[in-house]
Image (cartoon, rainbow, N blue to C red; front, top):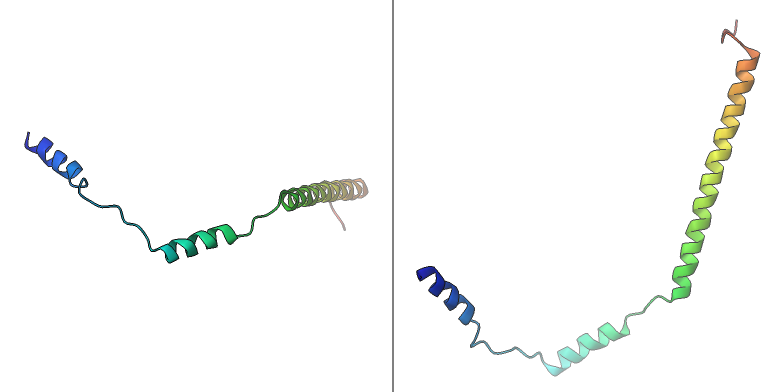
Length: 87
């Protein structure tokens, strides 16, 4: 019972609080700043995404071309020397 009264007292303590209203000039300045922020157009977002996809594709292609070249070099070396002894 004592705990319930304490909880009710806490909940009811906010009943008499008045809502705070900001000064008109402050509110106007805040709203002006929010509305003046620049937005990024969809064309920039799509262009950036396309460039990133192209760069990612080029990197993947370069990786596979280099790994193929290294495999070719290993085949040449193994065909020259069957026992890996160079003396």
